[in-house]
Length: 77
Image (cartoon, rainbow, N blue to C red; front, top):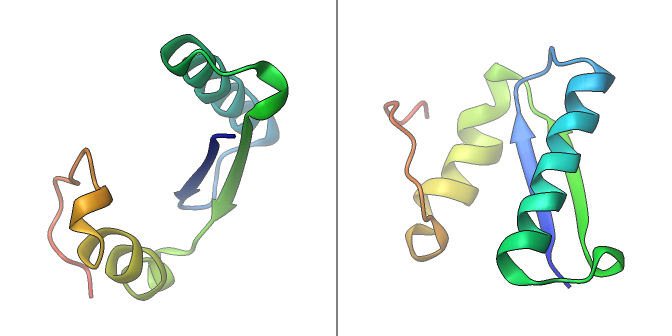
């Protein structure tokens, strides 16, 4: 039951979000062999002002064991 959560700055339109969700969904199915009905994808907009506290700290810096691709930017906190 894979569930992917994408957090990003606001500004993408619905069509872009739909395309991203479909691409992630397709990649999960192709890579993991998951059944389409078992995959879910959510997208959350996070303001730049909240990124450090709401995403970078708890989701990136505090969870190094779960981070498979590290960001190339400095700690924004």
